[in-house]
Every structure is written in structure tokens, then in C-alpha cells.
Image (cartoon, rainbow, N blue to C red; front, side, top):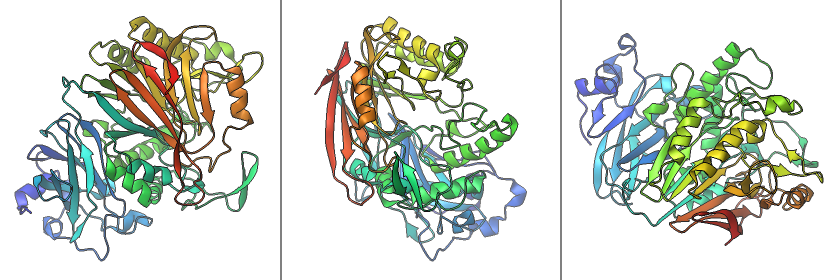
Length: 531
């Protein structure tokens, strides 16, 4: 372990060049006022009676030559400040070429700042493409668990296959995180988390109703509804203390996006659902954004600035697939009453905003990748549940932004590659559907795999009356079920396959996972086929 002299330490602390480079890595940390630091205290090696790595490790946003390594120090994760001294701390990191960390290929130090909840983000570059790496952190005589990450293939590499999981909606109170344990056991190139990593509400004591049935929480949130930065930090700490979630984070790199519950249910841009004045809600949103950044393996480009986070981005998996990660929250128009049809259909309304829409359309027009995958948050599919064929609309989904939806499907059809598949979540059910324009007899433009929740909705009702009604009246909807699980995606040059995994139970531990239904999209031929 290399010695840290005073000059190098001050650089790490942000007192010299911002974000000092260590080899080809730099620590992501906010700069701290020099007057507030006492170098003598800072240089003292911390000692902890118990491990500060209670929240595990993670990696994310992989590229062809690197990724982000993450951890957050907390000896007592559910108390104010995580039980940590209110001062910056040096954390050592190592990157290995083997699972046992016998061959260390990179090492360095990063700063854990109290201003960032003692989170550590190490952004690596200059690594070999298309291969696994292992990593760990040490501080105060304690070592973290060893995590596994992976670089993407080179942009020009002729890749034959990519495997990844799509998952999200993990309400802590409504089940065990068994699905995350099963994901950790899968050999994956990456995980896409579509959002609702936490839920912001307070626990409802005693028996409540879920799907018309009595329900009692499996476990309860600590604290009331969350508003402040420390509230959000503690809620993340409670979720991230779960061993199954930690195992999934440590098993593969993640691409993460937020949906609504990371801030507040159904928020849209600068508006919440309670008509809170925008200037007040934006204060809360800023706290939520900082906590989200602190707790996710995100790059410096996502660091919150002026109350905003840059979350939409693109990843290229060789010549096989481009992954377009969307942000359908920050730029969406205000949600409107769905009965006001003219407002819902207004061309002025957008779920992604004009700038992001242009960025997405430009990316989808690229002929290099064999496949384009749109990774987003809420349903693009229009489902019908009435005999007259009326679309089941939601002001929170793309059906609440109809012209935005039409423009996207028109563009996919115009480009004409027949190679676009979308992956999302939010609905707490599996959906496999073809995407068509407004009329049920119009041609198939694309297909969508909407992944069910990890826990939200508890054990679920299976193919219930609600699902049967939707299937009966929605010819483009191939399958739907109310069970917990995830979608395992297997993409080759010839086919994009979605395997809808379900668990028999989440209200008891160690549920069994099964492949419920599998559908494939053949390259150049939009439309789902059973696989």
C-alpha cells in the first residue's frame, strides 16, 4: 500500500488540483474549503471498532476502458452521519485481474467526504476492453467485500452476445430481495436498474390493504416520510444493508436510472403530485438527487449541479448493441388530467424534453450497432381493458404524453432497421408487448419487455382477472403476470430474447425462481415470437 505524503493527501482532499489523478483513476469528491480542514487530523489513520463497509460495494457505468467503483462508509448506517466522524477520510482501493486479488493491476487512494455522506467514487480509465476485473476497498484496518466488474468490448469489436438483467421497484417493506440474490447468481455482463430503488413513504403500522387483501409489512421503514438529505441517506442505508442487494451489486456492473420514488411519487420536472410550490419542491428534489448520487456507482458527469443531474447517456456494446438510457422525469411536461384529451395529445407535451428527444433520435439512426435497446422507466405499450378498445391511460406513463410516444414510434419506423427493443418497469407486473401506433390494426413498430418488481406488490396474484382483461382486449399484448422477478435479456446478432423470470414467493425467504415465458425478436422483423 503506497504511502500518502502531505502534498498528495491535500490533492486528494481537493485542496490542490480538483480530483487528483491516481494512475488513470480519479476520485470523485466535492472540493472542501481549505480553512475547514486540519491536515494533522486528516492524516491520522482512522480506526473503527466495526466494519465501515456495511453498505457493500458496487461498480457501474462501464465503458470499453473503465468503470466507476463505489462504496460508502457507515459503521452505523441508520444513525445520523452513519456513525462516522465528521471529517474526510482516505480510503485505499485495489483493482485485480483475478477473483482472489492475487494479481493487483491498479491501486490508489480516494477521499470519503462527509459532505457526500462518506461516499467514494473512483472513476477508472485505461483498462483492457471486454474483460472482468475485481476490486476492493480498505480503511481503518478493515477490508470490504470483493466485487466483480467488467469493461465493455471495444466499440469496433464484433461481439456475438450480451446478457443482462432488467430489474427495479424494490419496496423494502413488501418482500425479501430474493430476486437480487438470483440475479447475483446469473452470469451477466451488466444489470440495468430502471428505478424506484427506494420508496419515500413512512410505514403504515398494522394491517393494510393490498390488491383488496389484508397485508402486513414484512419489515418497516425507519423514520417518517423523507424530505431532508439525511432522511434520504438513511433510507438508502436501510435498503443497501440488505445482503441480497449487496450481492447483486458486487456481482456485475450496473447502469442505473431513477424513476419517481427516489424523490416523490409521480413527480414531473419541477412539480410534485401535491401542488407544492415549485421552488419548495425543487429544494427537496436537490436533496434527493445528492443522496442518489452518493449511493450509486455514477460518473462525475452525473454529479448534481444547480439542482440537475445528467442522467441520459449511451453505452456501446461493440457492434452488437447500443444501450440508450433515458431520463423520463426531469424534462417531462406537467402531468394532466387524462380526461382532458386535447391536453394529453398536445404536441407541446413531452416525456423526455426536446433536447433529449433529438439526442435519442440521432442515436437510433446510427446504422453501426446490430441492435438498439432503449432502457427507460415507464411503459411505452398501450394496453386496452375495455370491450370498446379504449386505451388504458396513465398520466405517469407514455400514454399520458401521446404525441411524444407517436414521435418516437414514427422515428423508429422511419429509420426502418427493425432492430429496436425497449426495456423498462414501474408497473409491478411483467409485460411482453408489441408496440403499435394508435390503432390496434396498425403494424408492429417495435417490442417492449417491461420487467416486474423485485418486491413491490408482495407475492402477487399471478394471471389475475386484471391481466386476463388486458390480454383479452389487447391483441398486441403477448403476456402479463402479477408476480415478482426480473427479465433476463440475451441478445445475439440474430435475436433479442427476453426471459421473464418469476419467484414463487417473496414474503418468505429463499423463494424459487423460474422462467415463466420467453419471447424473441428476430433481427429485421419487429414483433415478439415465443422462444
